Image (cartoon, rainbow, N blue to C red):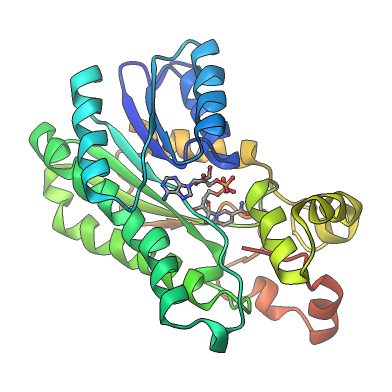
Length: 285
Ligand SMILES: NC(=O)c1ccc[n+]([C@@H]2O[C@H](COP(=O)([O-])OP(=O)(O)OC[C@H]3O[C@@H](n4cnc5c(N)ncnc54)[C@H](O)[C@@H]3O)[C@@H](O)[C@H]2O)c1
C-alpha cells in the first residue's frame, strides 16, 4: 500500500523504540521522513532502516525542548521536501518518583520535555500547515493520563495536558483543515518500559531488561488481548493518522493499549489491591 506516497512526516523521538517502528512502517507506505532525536546513534539506525525501505529520510539531531531547533527542523523540512503533512510529537523520557519528592526542579524538567517539548515542534510547523491548508498533528500521550498509576505525577499531568491541547487546537485550526489527535499509548515493550521498571525497582537497566523477559507471562495476563504491546502495534496507528484515511478524524484521544484501559476509566484502576501488588513494577507508562 502506498497511501503515504508524496507525504512528508516529521517524527520527534524518531530514534526511539516506537518512533523507529513507526518510521519504518510509514517508509514502507511511501512517506518521506524527517526524524529527530537527541540520541544520534539510535536516530541514524532508524533513518537507515527507513531508507532501506525506500524512503527519503532527513535525520536531525535536534532537541524538542529548544525553540530555535524546532524552527530549524521546520525550515529544513520545507527546504528538503517542500511541505509538511504531519508532525508526530513523540519525544519522551521516564520520570518516576513519589509525588511528594517531585520538587519544582523535577516537575519543571519533566513538563519541559513531555508537554512544552511536544508543543514547540507543533508550533514550529503550524504556519506551513496553515499555508498549505492541510496537515495532521499527532502526540504521544499515555494511558497514564486516563487511569491512575502511582509515582508519575508530573509525567501523567503532562500527558493529560497533551490530550487537552489537541482538543483546543482541533477547534482553533479545524477550518485550516489541520487535524489534531492524541495516542493514549499503553505498555509497549522497549527502552521506555525497561527504564521505567529499573527506576521503580532501584535496579540497573540490564537487570530490568532481564526481568521484563522473565515476567512476560504474568504481565501479559492483565491485557484483555492477552499480551503486552510492541512498537509494531503502534506503528500502523501512526500511519493511519498520517494518511488521508483519517481525514475526518480530529480532536480524538485514541487508545492503542491492548484493551488495558477498556473505556478509559476501568482497566488497571479496576484491579484489586492484591492484583496491583502482584503486578507492582510490571505495569508501566
Ligand atoms: N513505551 C511505552 O510503553 C509508552 C507508553 C505510553 C506512552 N509512551 C510515550 O511514547 C513516546 C515514545 O516512547 P518509546 O517507548 O518509543 O520510548 P523511547 O525511550 O524508546 O523513545 C523516546 C525517544 O525520545 C528521544 N528524546 C528524549 N528527549 C528528547 C528531546 N529533548 N528531543 C528529542 N528527542 C528526545 C529519546 O532519545 C528516545 O529515542 C514517549 O513520549 C512516551 O512517553 C510510551
